[in-house]
Length: 235
Image (cartoon, rainbow, N blue to C red):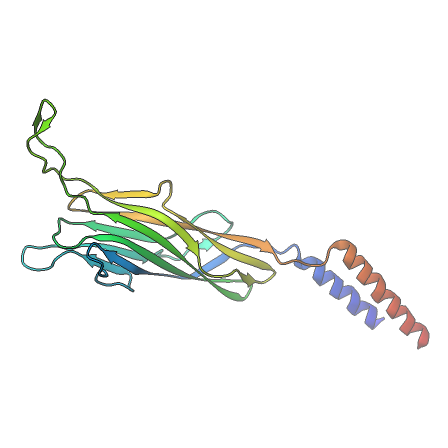
């Protein structure tokens, strides 16, 4: 009887595992670093490999422009597979001289916890950057511009997004990261001499780890029951 009790308990636990919820999942860390930065002269931006990059000449009466990533704070708790904020991309647009930024990757790394387990995921955003020449027309006559010196917004365009990590398991579910980017567009613009914050978003998808189908469980149970009865008869 003790053997049959163990069999019944095992079958119950296996069946119950299929009903465990995939969420909530806690995000334990979000880190980001700009990589593969490229300026117009072929060099890298100052701060390549960190969470803040700058470009433009330095010196008296000169300013630099910059991009900075700050992970979400407080860190989110995920209750479903809805989009959540990875953090803020801050674009500082100053009038600069010298080589401008053309493109950069933003590599993000996340930590997760759930069901007593830990997991990690990583991905990359690829952005292009357009440092406009500030040649908007502020005075003209009959379609002829006499003062093409007006400010023009600088733009940041999301070109691509890739997940560089494999899926991970928390409890009885397998999770995969999905990068989204900006909320509703692939282009973000910042007026001259201003600072703009843009949220970046992602999703965490979940799928149950495959378990034996009910028919398989039934056959397993019958087999174990038969084995138990054989042992009882022999005893």
